Length: 81
View 1 (tube, rainbow, N blue to C red):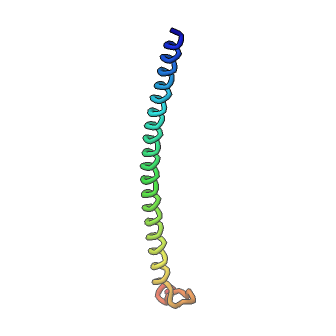
View 2: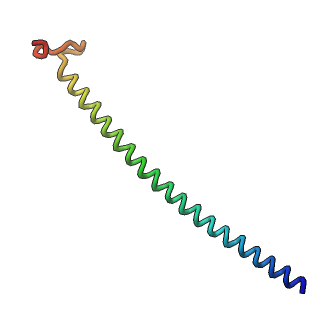
View 3: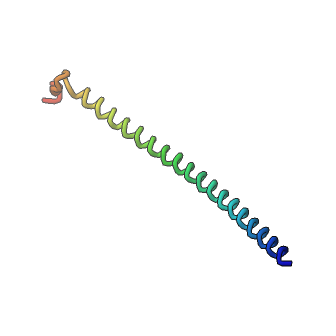
């Protein structure tokens, strides 16, 4: 009788560990998926900000180039009047 109880206890213990492991694995997979989505979203936002900043710098460079007369950075003659 003692062996039956020990076997039953061992079976219940083993099944509880196995079921917890599956739950933990599922939670881990869900967490990894969520992290992946967060990384993708934030990378996209960062890319958009970098692109907007690059466009702003390009516009400022174009404006500065159009306002100079030569490569030495002298102001255009029409700006001085």
